[in-house]
Length: 325
Length: 251
Ligand SMILES: Cc1cc2nc3c(=O)[nH]c(=O)nc-3n(C[C@H](O)[C@H](O)[C@H](O)COP(=O)(O)OP(=O)(O)OC[C@H]3O[C@@H](n4cnc5c(N)ncnc54)[C@H](O)[C@@H]3O)c2cc1C
Ligand SMILES: Nc1ncnc2c1ncn2[C@@H]1O[C@H](COP(=O)(O)O)[C@@H](O)[C@H]1O
Image (cartoon, rainbow over all chains, first blue to last red; front, side, top):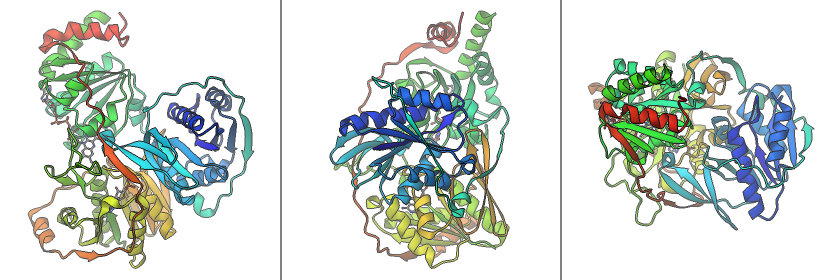
């Protein structure tokens, strides 16, 4: 059996968890028709949506640790619930989100087995060998996962969430996991809304206007912010911009910032270093605006405009205002 | 008074292109400098601030080759007062091996807090902090960008899916730091002098690493397919036409 940790939201199963389910199903077929089962922790915001998504992904069983003590997130507590459902699992798989990573690291430690983080593909099934992103996605590493059980986190948006050829009717097993006091020690005690300018606005945006060192100064963002507003998007920046204190860190895109997947990323005055690319490579389309036609961001983009962003962005804003009336 | 340990890892400084060694087992770092993860720079800053605020000390540790002393000295230059080097061929070490080796050292000491980076910038395993916590029987939280100490209570804060999440846990604990909550300081001239002089404690490890990393490959070079829409402000019309074309703007 392959067990997939699913994260849930108001629609059902999150997109990255559905990607992990698709990854697990393809692997299960290659391993010779292993069933794929799912585990979810705590009260579900939208149970019917969860079951619909699991059916679409061909999941045969949902293990639901329906316990109020799991309503507040905690890595150790969630992992205890996952391990409870994993007794016959040969693989435990989740998505490479911050929570997914934390819970899976606990699971791997509790099961005393290997964990491969940020996996993008299965190379071989016997012995199980995977390929994963390292160096922020700039390099792939082949890793062997021996042993009776192993843990895999699937890199976000590295594979598509594809519905199964035949949908399933998942059975539901509700259970009370064994939780110790130590497991409950590291749960969230409160969540403070960051206001309208939090990271989720950036990660969920359909259009992200990106700005790098080319913005020139903290005062150089007016036109970029106007472009963002005209397109109803969010602002994302490079690490140079946050390090210089021009913009707050929650706007940073990249390996050590947010990973975004908008329909369009407009990268203005950003060179396209590997660590930045790690955060924006899932954008459907990229428009680079840069003085340097050879900048990696320009050569990797779908579209480019060569020149000074301080001349080009105001011109785009004027044209947009004209057309939007 | 809390003594804080912060763990850092020497990694090659790569930004636009990564060269691999001929055997494909590691990054060819002969022509690039070395650094530590951005998360670890933040962890060093937090360690120094907490040690200052509580009247304790900040110790920096790395497991790595002889050259990794360079990264220890960088951390001393900004304010760590003790440096520990577990000398080993870190390339062969997986996260479980690193955690075991660090735990062996920590058991003989009295740190109220051990800080690590969320994930190392090269291998990105995301495990050393968690595995270390289990080896020591201590609580752990990850993705934390700011930490406050009040006696034996640690308040840790990090970004969650619905806002800033706050954790409260008892010392001693392990915390994996995420960049963004603090601004790492630059070394002063006095700091650099101290760093040159401070003796580094070198210790050996009994851990013999497991080998399951089979090698590295670079992603295939993609030929550029960029469509240049124009140069300078005259390109604005072509840009907006493109925005309409891909459905980002409706006209
Ligand atoms: C461990 C580690 C983690 C990191 N994590 C991240 C991360 O999460 N996110 C991140 O972004 N970086 C990260 N970095 C840093 C990364 O390596 C680069 O240094 C950074 O992304 C460069 O930012 P930049 O593109 O704004 O600046 P630069 O590389 O300096 O590029 C500026 C670009 O702007 C162009 N330009 C200049 N003036 C103009 C103008 N007037 N008009 C138009 N174009 C102009 C230039 O041609 C150039 O291409 C990390 C680095 C390390 C070592
Ligand atoms: N060789 C090492 N020496 C010291 N600390 C390390 C080493 N490897 C990893 N760490 C610490 O553990 C964190 C997470 O690493 P990883 O689990 O490998 O992604 C890093 O950010 C470091 O703080």
